[in-house]
Amino acid sequence: MNRKSLALAVIAVALGLAPVAAHADLVLPRISPKASAMQQIGTTDLTVSYSRPGVKGRAIWGGLVPWGQPWRTGANEATTLTNTTEVKIGGQTLPAGTYTLITIPAEGEWTVIVSNQKGLWAQGPYDEKQDLFRFKAKPTASENVEWLQFTFEDVTANSTNLVMRWEKLALPIPVTVDVNGLTMAHARDEVAKAKADDWRTPYRAAQWTFDNNVSMDEGSKWLEQSIKIEPSYSNMNLKARWLAKNGDTKGAIASAEQAIAINKKAKTPADATQLETMLAEWTGKKK
Image 1: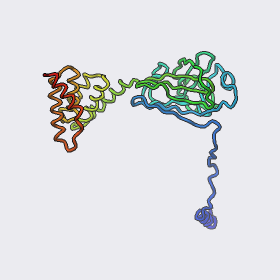
Image 2 (image 1 turned 45 degrees about the vertical axis):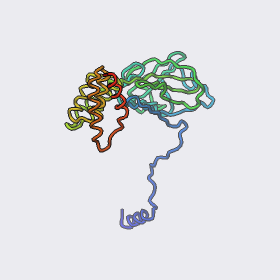
Image 3 (image 1 turned 120 degrees about the vertical axis):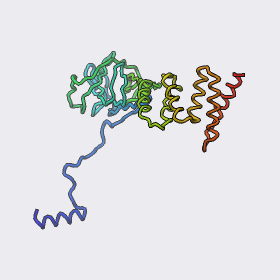
Image 4 (image 1 turned 90 degrees about the horizontal axis):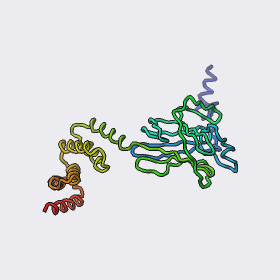
């Protein structure tokens, strides 16, 4: 570029006249808009991402979506499921990751395919070799839904159904999470990494085992570890309730009295009403 051309370019930039990049993307509305749904089970996040085609008066099942052929279970990009921990879907173990959900619709049971294939579009060829596993799912009749929809339904503490609805059909896909196993593994890891003066981490781990009646022997050791580091209102309160649950009323009374004494000396005392009520009941039992 000669001096004259360079000068003109500098002036153009200064005046805001620089040309727009020749290959800028033009974003237009999609006929089938993007959507997503998320559900947490325990500490596991489940996210389904998909595009929502409309019925628009068309024959869907056996028509627009043929029987017996792999379908990306939506429009545009294939539908994906992301799970942040290991789960079971359709009874099969699925490691943490992002996967493509492909279905083979049928007049009876459908085949659901969990695939490692990425970037599958309407025009792209489906690669069966990238299937992780397959399982059967049975569709049910549903109220009419114009735009394809995924929802997480029938949520429990450790399970949910990922339900696809479109037109007058619903396809539930069961997902389960080993919440107790995952939580205990995480608790063990965090207690092992806790600093020498950290009484709260083993206390919180012990509290979870107590509240959920899970691995109580291991939780009891975490509670004693917490108390050994620093007796507090929180961990002595938990010990009192733990002993009472095990039938040791005398021990529960002693621990409750120690917890209340610690609480009275605290700069910001906790509300000890509930523990005081329990202490009165235990004392009555003792008499």
